[in-house]
Image (tube, rainbow, N blue to C red; front, side, top):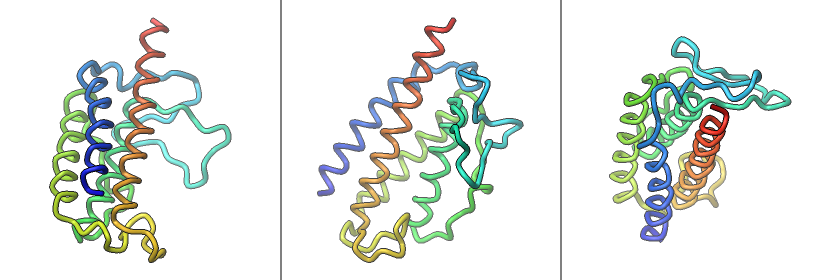
Length: 162
């Protein structure tokens, strides 16, 4: 199970690396529509109730979003007190954001190597005893895959709109 989860994670990460290697600092702030979620003055847009229609995120917002859910997941998996969403800052355009994501990856690999996959999931299903850490790792893979696809789509749209 661990090998399959790691293989899936590495595959997804390799797709993200394709995008991270090509992103410019300007790509992070590009707004694909008039109705966007962005990071403004270091603060990500947010709504406690999902708006309708859902705003189109910027790459800055998506990278913050990855950093937020992954940081909180790592807090839970490492036995640390989970931080609130508002405590997860965004490091900035370009290399700071890329480095942040790569550092989260390195920490995740370390945690995943030693954690008991059969233990109850501390997050995001802490109230469901049938969900295990293996489920949590699968969720990380699928959430990351979704976010990688969003970044890729935003890069394509920006490139073709120039």
